[in-house]
Length: 170
Image (cartoon, rainbow, N blue to C red; front, top):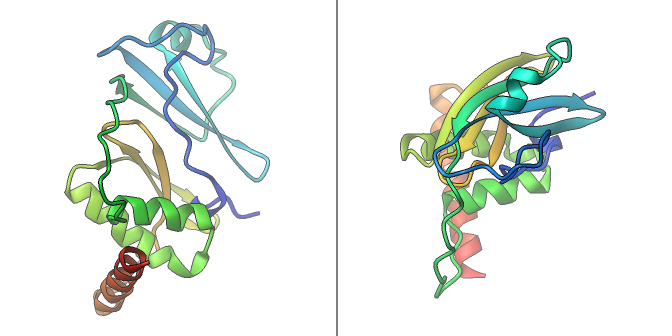
């Protein structure tokens, strides 16, 4: 059973506690928990109160603490144009394992630009998995680490350039 990023759709950060149903307030600390469930993952966002009252015998696959920021108003998009973040979202949602290298490089690029923050890395039967959180909206991205060699980077960069240029020309 493969539980890698390509098998799990991106889940948005909740605006309410999964346990209490109370809305998160701007700046409030909360916990995100990922549970393995069937063929994928289930995400729960808990307030600190719910976190302290949870059943500690139920252990998540991964968890982390974040500060809640309400989603910003979406600016109008005069010309829809695919950027690195859009491309990463599209490639992950397509479940195309041929683009695992591109997904990894895009995630690292977005991490360097401080769009994504690596929260954790986990070792699975299929290899290392990197867990990223989007800094502004809390979306979670699970990306497989393909263990790229330095000699492979240029071909992956060319693949990404080709994917971006084909997306903007269509």
